[in-house]
Image 1 (cartoon, rainbow, N blue to C red):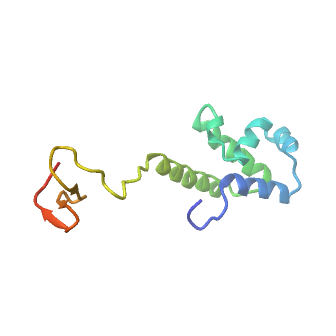
Image 2: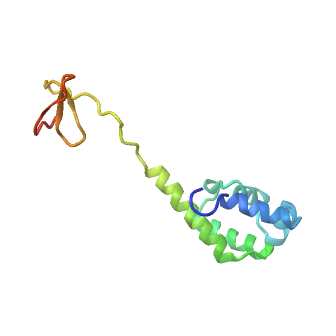
Image 3: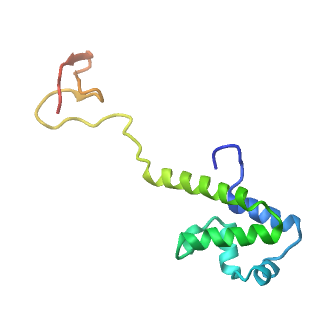
Length: 128
């Protein structure tokens, strides 16, 4: 995860739980959150939850039970969710544009000009 936190939210939660010697079963009993959902939180598997509102509530309960700052946990979740959303939307631009197939010779450059042959001669305005 980018930013000043080198660990994911799930890694942070698991580390904090284990440092307090609390088992998942004990945490589940005290928070009334199923072990399955607790494991999903610690694995950053937010797709396992039917609704986002459940995630926020479970994170608050998890944090409260371990004595963590709830706002810090939610802030980490929001940052991680934002980065995940950016990764899903990201589309890599081609490094080398493909040939233009409309009967013109040469390759089209990203700025719309064209290169003809190996001499580097440009044709302008040269849109495909």
